[in-house]
Image (cartoon, helix red, strand yellow):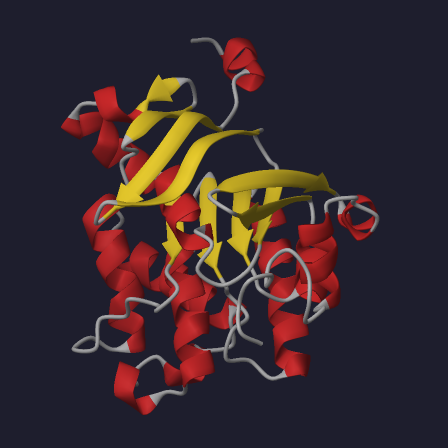
Length: 261
């Protein structure tokens, strides 16, 4: 496929995707296209399937029904070699960070570079320090996971996710555990880093103001499906009552009807 043809193909596409976990349907018949360079922000109530959707888009969950495409290629039909190549082009920050507790801050990033690049030691060191400096952890390079705060672990997970300068960057609630000032700074940093590496970004946040800061295209996840609500201004005016309840934090509405409150 030529560069011109590739530019017309979505970076990620979900076609009629249904995800079942432990015989429970989490998402049903989901269709979504993500263009190259897009910023997609996933919002919605807790437990609605945002993390499952993100992991499916990243190729970490396989759909029970339907197909997931990356650059026009069906992930389920990729060879092991192609999947390894794809892993080098994808950066993921997990909800629980997935930090190696037996490795130092420095070694957590070094592991990714050792696995997926042929950099020499000097090149690896330069890239590791670039990533740590970007998230303000350069002074903590020799610390271990149990020696740093929860917010610092989140920043380390982001640093590791960008280490390979990925084309596709998936971040699951990246500003969790940060105070309001540092959350704002980190969100701006993520956007800056994303622009520098020219990545397609998919990010989850439960904070509607943070979603507006990131957006992009906002996608609301609820009731086993998705609703694309548009940019920040369009989302604010979206007619779906579930969206309105979520963004304004109303106690009563379709998201909580039938529940004890």
